[in-house]
Figure 1 (tube, rainbow, N blue to C red):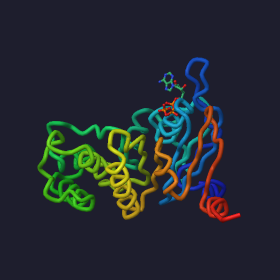
Figure 2: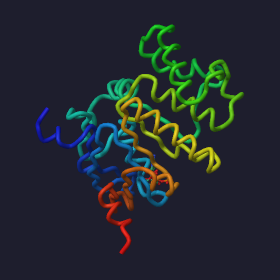
Figure 3: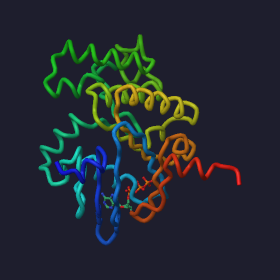
Figure 4: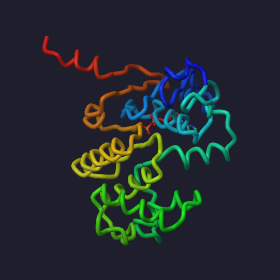
Length: 240
Ligand SMILES: Nc1ncnc2c1ncn2[C@@H]1O[C@H](COP(=O)(O)OP(=O)(O)OP(=O)(O)O)[C@@H](O)[C@H]1O
């Protein structure tokens, strides 16, 4: 690992490009995510937010550019290796929780660990601990169909955190919830991620949610249009 990459944070993208046909979904993005930081990605529909999140998370491969996790290239790994990396190092929260309907809340949360060879007793104990932290004590045995939208999303958040990932990738995590439930759920997610020491990257259309995070990146036409970081925001908020 070179010193240069050490200074670029936990997850770094350089010169990221992705085309679909003649459409530039990503037109050259440089981005650095620091350990433990929470970052919002906002921008118009079709601007490339999801493509950026998917590229950084190793779900898709960029056509050009480099992605490094703790200094090591991950963009050119095989699909098998990237899938292993996603399971071990990353956590995912999507708009609808994508829970397995037949499994209980605790089984859903334990599933990634079970797939990774963790003993059932240990996986279930960890699942219960995170469900408890997310305010779901007593609902461990409920199936997704028996939970409210907000509760189901908390199960998905617990599932994304239980294996202690380095980064949580969340794509429109509150899109299916009413505003109040969405905000409460996000607060719970950010607190739990902070407790786990995980960075969080959230794609959202909710500008209030974005404004509540320390850093916001605005994407337009596949490029970073603006970035608001803590210092810049404090200055911007100072009365004239
Ligand atoms: N699998 C795909 N096949 C073809 N075109 C795609 C694909 N995925 C994305 N695109 C195109 O790439 C561009 C960026 O899409 P992306 O989903 O990243 O935007 P977004 O900012 O996340 O949009 P939204 O806010 O509507 O979810 C769009 O023009 C989209 O139509």
